[in-house]
Amino acid sequence: MQDFLFISDCMQPIIKKVKLDLFNSFEDETMSAIIKKEQPSFIPFLSLRQKFGIHQKGGFYPLPKKYACLLDLCKRIEMNYLRNQCQIQFTVQNNFTEIIQVLQLLNLDPNLYKLKVIQDGIVIQHPLQNNFNKNDNKTIVKCSQEQKQLSEQIENRIKLLRQKLDQQVQIKHKEHLTINNCEDFEQFGSQFKIYHNDFDLNDSPDVKPIKLKKQIFSKELIQFHIDILNCLIEHYDKRGVSFMFYDNIVTILSVHLNKVKSEIEKGLKNIMNLIPDKMNILMDHINKQRWMIQLDRASLLQLNKQIILNQFLCY
Image (cartoon, rainbow, N blue to C red):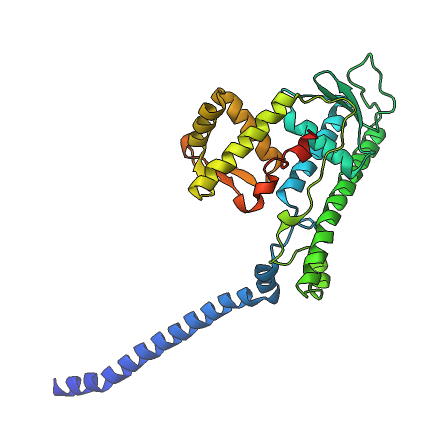
């Protein structure tokens, strides 16, 4: 029995040492695995991306929201023509902001569309619609080759507009780099299609709409939108806030302007579509009463209150 105890006592340190060695080896393997996992996060490009901006997919520069809205409308018009090959009619009652945005697009490219002014809106005729028949609302492209060529032409038109919008931002970005002595960033930015982190995309110039020969917006309608914006700014300024509940502000404007809530909501939507860089609605919550309207008071100076919408509405 004593011999057995002696042998077990001799083996015990060895067993402990083996356990300790196994634990140490496991700890070493775990630490090395953690280190290996952490290594990809130190790629230089990721840190530069975090420092200077977000890398854009598809090889395009990021666009400010006010330019992205114009590009989206152009895509919708082009895709509609590709499918139907027909004219598009926008009415003041149903397409208030779309009409103004089309006039903005024509400022960027006068040859983008042909316009015909009607009593309650505009008719947009696509320049590729050479063989349009007035007695037929839809022109069917019979040949698949012609359809393919048409698709390519439309794709190029959208691409050219995108380039013009990019140029508007890049001119402003270049001025920003010059003022802040960051000209060396320009080559890097063009390589990865990003802008300097200190550059605000919303500083890009507004695109003013062209003037129509015949005014289709009534003075009362234009004044209604201007009154909404002015009431909003004054209400936010008094409280020194930038966020307010959507349902509350609709009620306040409805009482102040003596309009039904549906009219106020429609006017708010129009304004947000026209100046998305200065006014936005946060609809993250399921309950509509919890939606928030955000107003960038810093960009809406006192002097601009009367003209912020005039430049869009040609009033």
